[in-house]
Image (cartoon, rainbow, N blue to C red; front, side):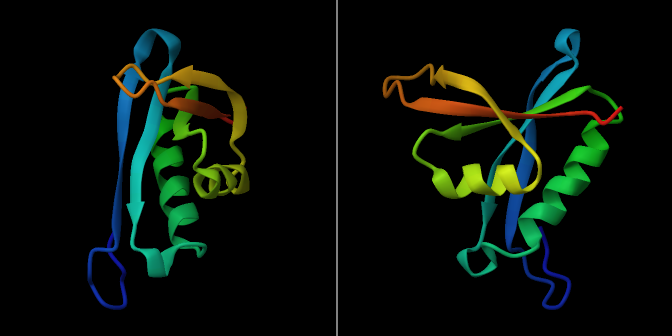
Length: 105
């Protein structure tokens, strides 16, 4: 993510875990400089990424740490719905929550 005014890099995000058979992709690992939290930047980025993803898949999922309430609220603001929980497959066994947005029909 580049702030137009200054031209500086302020964050990043990516697609991950494409599942063609389920017509699903994950958006995640979004990082944003702290001074840009709570503004329009995350919502605008997610909107662009969702528009692009929905050209190819029917569902976009977001996996967020169970205690990361800030990210969960940000996802709710863009219309994501909580669909479940999962265990992270590493030594920490950290619990995650899973949100999803389905392609508008």
